[in-house]
Length: 138
Image (cartoon, rainbow, N blue to C red; front, top):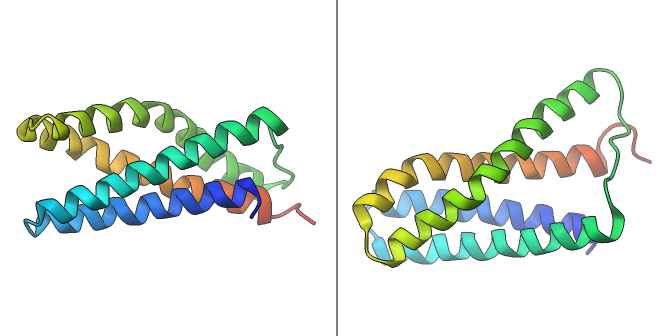
């Protein structure tokens, strides 16, 4: 599997685990929630490793679409990139708070972190689809 496809898969797995973790905690299933969120962290870590490896080897990959597709691509890419930079420290701090048993502080921060993490994961898949399978691709 090419690295960009693997990275998109890890983003999708992360999004699925984050949503699953949210449903589980809403039902009071703390242990299952913890497992789902650790899986989301693992998938996100694998994504980040793959992403850095790919861009160290290949550099930036230009979007080849034009017109409205180009506008759509950048309308997704720009907030994705900005929020991805913000999400990483938030995800780490949220996880550390849970690991240290600071559940009230964890819960407060998770209310911001979860939607941000989910947005970044889902838009990461959208960026991949547009860049590697969208208009202007052979």
